Image (cartoon, rainbow, N blue to C red; front, side, top):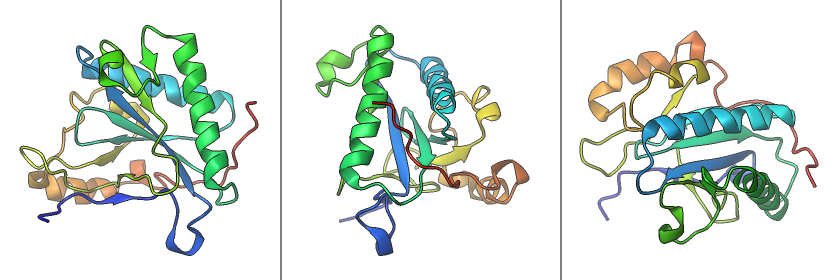
Amino acid sequence: MQTVEFHGWGSRAGQVETPDRLVIDLDPGEGVGFEAVKAAALQLRRSFQAIGLQSFALLSGGKGVHVVVPIDPVARWREVREFAKSFSAALADAAPDRFTIALPKAQRRGRIFLDYLRNQRTATAILPYSARARDGAPVAAPVCWDELKAIERADAFTIADVEQLRKRARSPALKGWGTGKQGLPDIG
């Protein structure tokens, strides 16, 4: 099948029914630039912080950013999906000119789709350091929140940057990226 990309569930093999991460994929609609995507990712970070959750940024290697929230593998898929949906819907309701949770692409023009649907059983999301099956073979790359501001594209790294990516992966700045012990708060 000429497979290149590695997508993973939000759970581990030994605990398939209890996710250990939540992912919101910021997918820019037509007419939305990467500066707006970065601003949205930082907004999600602040919103997650406001409810006591630590999050991490992942350049998708495509057009957007994934905001990754590690969670204790306690809640089941339905609860995680409902949390992700409620969180995303609240952001879209608060800023309907910037965000949407509407699935049809025609309704996304000029806005960022907050794709919470990656948080359900059998759904997947691109994994860190996976090459993408796109021109130039970009790589999904973890980044620090501080450095995200200076990055110009979601596909800033490619397979040609393998040595730089290896060095970054071992850097103190990315130590602990995507890990943490935290449960889902009640935002009902």
